Image 1 (cartoon, rainbow over the protein chains, first blue to last red):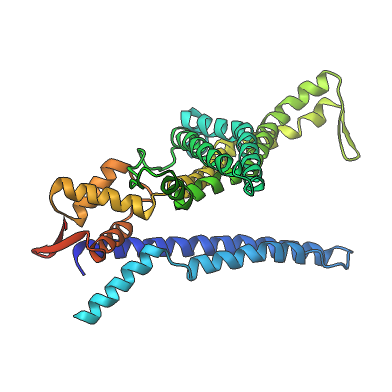
Image 2: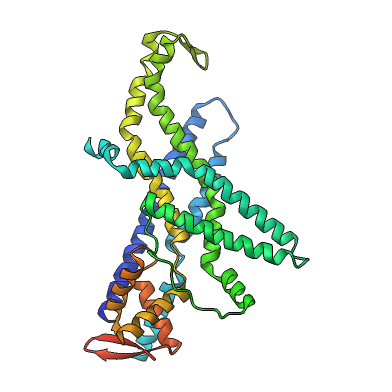
Amino acid sequence: MDEFGELALREREARRIARRQWFWLHLAVFATLQVFLFVVWALGSESYPWFIFPLFGWGIPIAAHAVYAFVVQDAEEIMVQRAMRQGGEQE
Amino acid sequence: MTWLLGPYTEARTYRVAAYLLLGLGLGIFEFTILVTGFSLGLGLLVTIVGVPVLVATFLVARALATIERRLARSWLDAPLPRRRLARPEPGGVFWARLRSLTTAPRTWAEVAFLMLRLPMAVLDFAFITALIGAILGGFAQPIVVAAGVDTQIGSWTIDTFAESLIFIPISIIFLLVGARLVLGWGGLSRRLAAHFLGRVDVAELKQEVLDILARSEGADAFRVLDELGLRLGHGSFLTPTRVEATLLALQSSGHVTVRRDGSRPIFTPA
């Protein structure tokens, strides 16, 4: 890999780390709030589990964020990785 | 304390606040124009009239996106491409131009932004007015009580001067964090604008890279990145990975050839 390829690799790595850090922060806020809502429900007199609505309502975006942070790759990233693999096979 | 109060002395804070406050009017206008244009155009598509209506709507969307881009760049300091990109020439035929307009990912990103602008602007407006209310409300409460107007919060009536002072500490807290909250919220709008309006399509980037290589009669990837930075500015639309991918794509399509100069590959137009 040439010098520019290494720069691009470092940039991709930094972006990946940033994406994952944002996800963990999002998850921490989500978890804190859901625990708070659960405690409010548990301490209250109401038996209807209303806390499940924010749990699922926000849980779906959390799941989508997890997919974005850990699974999704940009088209350019896939293309570069494919070219790198092909280059490696040729060598 | 400087971190909290410093932004009050910066013009940027008031620009962001103005963007959040005034966006609602623009958002309503854009949403109305686009929804009307697209529904009318699609509805009339069975007749020939629908086509010009849709074309006009796309052109209006492009013009509105240009206004939004200027606003986001000057008021939010959003990292957007500096100048209008040289789009690959689709040819003079009307249908080819139309196809180019409607199939460009940038067009759809712009339309998506304009459609999202209204719900975002409603949230922006609610946030900024609530914040201004929270800051001013506490300080205004003693004046309100002195004027003989009672404030009712649930079953509690605030009708004495002592009671009216309770809200001042809350207002002070909001005053302390207010400017930072505005900048933080503006940062979200900035990211959104940069994501949707700061797109440089692959075809456009290829065209720019080919232009740079033709002018310099060959360059390495670092130089291409520098030249693109000078032309377009810096932002998520211009990353080393994007440049690398573009050069690879041009290489595999035969538009560019590569020769080695030491350890660095030099790209020249084929």
